[in-house]
Image 1 (tube, rainbow, N blue to C red):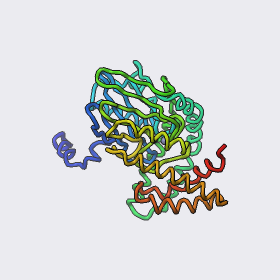
Image 2 (cartoon, protein in one colour; image 1 turned 180 degrees about the vertical axis):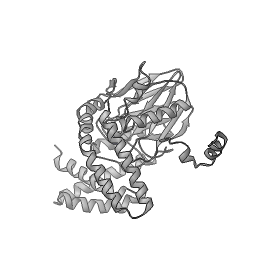
Image 3 (tube, rainbow, N blue to C red; image 1 turned 120 degrees about the horizontal axis):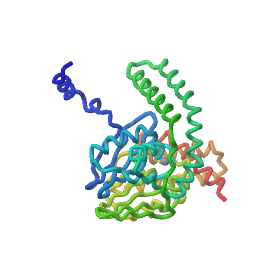
Image 4 (cartoon, rainbow, N blue to C red; image 1 turned 30 degrees about the vertical axis):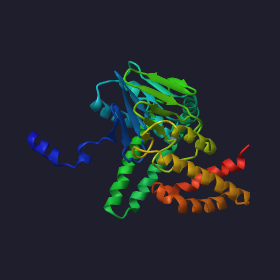
Length: 339
Ligand SMILES: [Zn+2]
């Protein structure tokens, strides 16, 4: 095919197949971008991209080095400046497993910043999790293959086939992953004072994990929240629910107009802060009441889930009814096992 024909074809291809970018880049302020992750089989978190005079700071690195490398290619289209700082908002796999891509792309020096608690958790829990997943992924892939046999429509087949190839790619990456720990840690705050802007990296209390940090741009009024607040249903497995409400209270008092969250779209108001605080409050109160009434874990799960679904399902994402049960389990454990 000659070049002209190729160029014409390229013009008429739908945008999604022209580029296999993994992120939608959205400008939020001058030199500040949200990289909103597109859906993949192994979820990628969003990133924030912040220009700092002659260098770039990126918040979070997704679930695998190839995703971080894909974002690096997109960053290179925005600016020739090197990435000098990477922030891990917390220790969850889908926020740090791509770390190695940054020092390998800019060997001259990248600082990976996190709270002290997050670095410890990556070391103590992140590394065993990668090893565990290397052992469990083959069974997950076998299950997908079994699902493929049962698929009844071409669309289902295509979607499962895509999942299988992504799962296989992910497993291959896990096997060669060089777990890259943060190189710079702090306990409460780390502030970068640059000519063009100030970046405050803040630990405001325990929340989604014990080490969550927020990245705050006071001049641009932008707050990056990781998973302490986002557009999906909160995952509470490693959380401190009572502290989480207090931490959101503190974060909400910062002066910001835009939120770049760990998942979901950019937010332009503080509505979600109110929603999450109210949801956690109800979850804890209803679960404690069920426990006080003598409910077993299963009984509490049913009773409180029903209550929360009727009150909140239309205010969270469509997965809420599926996810709420595990939140009740967490609340029950917190209630029953509180010291
Ligand atoms: Zn998380």
